[in-house]
Length: 251
Image (cartoon, rainbow, N blue to C red; front, side):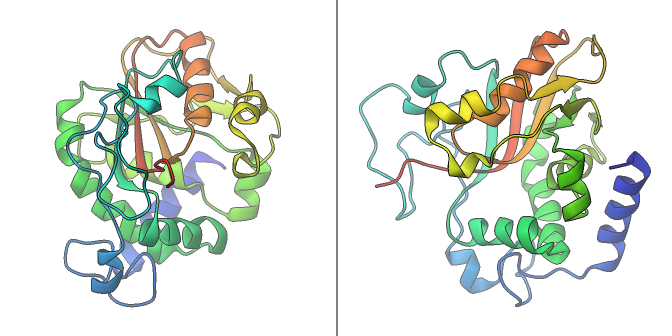
């Protein structure tokens, strides 16, 4: 998607769309992405999470997650060689948050997108202030996917989260170089294989300094790890992941 089109779309979203519930058609509560009913079915992650993979320890306060394990961190154990040094996530990927992202990604609901963009920026302000000046780089999609959907949510997130901060959004620093299967249709081992060498930095060497890798959802971490590996190959040494939602182990 051309850079100018991304900026024009974000400007239109900021100016034209009224705040509404991200998960249904009702008005949103003040300073919330959701109406009163959907707010009850959304779960902000607690402050006590693994700093590397953002898995809550103990796991969750929602009815969707498994009981806490006595093992150190099951999330990190599944990704022992991840190049990502830290992760921040806002919500559990369940309930109203899952529905909101479905509406955005598969129905093109820009009202839902606007609600999540604004509220997530407010909630992430302390984290963004604490991070050193960084490039916010979205995990890219294939051009044909962008043409079909008309917008790219990680790019909208990166641009909105960088706005008014000491960070800069680098929306086109990474590119996706080949088609891949939908990650949701694959098992854990297949997800990593599916994304191997699927991303590449547009420049052989990226500017020195930390990078914040932006995506909408962290599930197994395979997508973030593949994108982070491409950044490492371009000389990036410190990579922090920033996502809207994180999936948790099921019961």
